[in-house]
Amino acid sequence: MKRLSIKIIGVLMIAIFLLHGSVLLAANSEENKLKNEQNEINKDKKEAEADLKEVQAKKSETVKQVEEISSQISDYQSQIDELDGKITEMNKKIEESEKKLKEAEEDYSKQEDLLNKRLVATYEAGETSYLDFLLSSDSITDLISNYFLVTEVATSDTELLEEIQKQKEQIEEAKRTLEESKKELATSKANKQSISTQLQNAKKEKNQQVDKLSQDEKQIQEQIDELRAASSQIEKEIKAAQARYAQQIAELENKKNNGSSSSGNSNNSNNGGGNYNGGGKGVLQRPVSSGPITATMYYSNGSYHGALDYGVPSGTPVYSAADGVVITTANLTYSYGTHVVIQHAGGIQTWYAHGTSGSICVSPGQTVSRGQLIMKSGNSGKSFGAHLHFEVRVAPYNYNTCRVDPRNYF
Image (cartoon, rainbow, N blue to C red; front, side):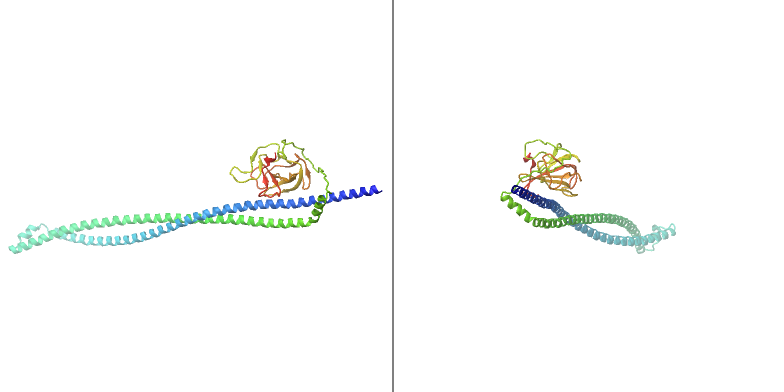
């Protein structure tokens, strides 16, 4: 009877320990899941902030370009003002030329009329000549007087003809000047129109650049604000989970320190496709049986990646890299997309991301074996083509400082 009581007490103690172990696993699983979600949000926030800085840098450069455009606009406006002054001056010259042309034409008409009258009078006199006019003189004095008159008339006629010819030339020159002024005016107007068009295009380009950058900056800032709000909410949930399980965790830690711990490695797994022996003698094995490594810890452009990418098509089986406990799984439309996180011995975590949505075949708290099928690769979340994103993290497992090169563990 005494032995039976001892056995019952022992069974009860084991049951209590297993119950507390389950509580601890659940607490750790929930807390780790929240932390992983927060890490993902922090990652997205960091990327968004980097995008914001890039947009702001582009905006700064564009503002500089806008200032140059504004300077060009100012230059265009100065040219337009100069053309306006030139056009005004040309209009004045044209008015003066037209006035002079009108006066010259009037003078020409008068002188032409006078010459015509003289010619008519000479014609009507018939055969009378200057010689007859001189021979009709009554005396030497009269002859000299008549000769002087004849000479004056001849000189006057010659000067009149020369003046008429000169006025004709002046009129033609005025006409040519007027036409050239009109052509120059038309050219100036065309130049003004061309510069005005360039000015409008520059303004339009300026407005489009400012509007686009402002819109991009606004959208990214809204995304950052949303991520900050989500991160803040998860932080509250983590604190609540820690408080909720604080007593159970403390009790289990005390029992472990007092030597009351036990080990029970139950394999609560469902292979769902068989195991895969990835070979190698390291702590971890390849998570896929085929496919080249297409990206390492750094991208080809030098930016940090923090993982290995395996170039495999969607639907390729993905296997656990070592024995461990599934910490969290999720089917996200952003960040890591469909992913699984497994905790291994020695403080190692492995992350498998961008799987096919709905392909996860393990659950949080489940113990899995090395080479056990956990999901299938895909192109979910923030991904630009089918592949497997494989990370290794060490304690305390944060995104920024705890990702290490998986090849060190193969």
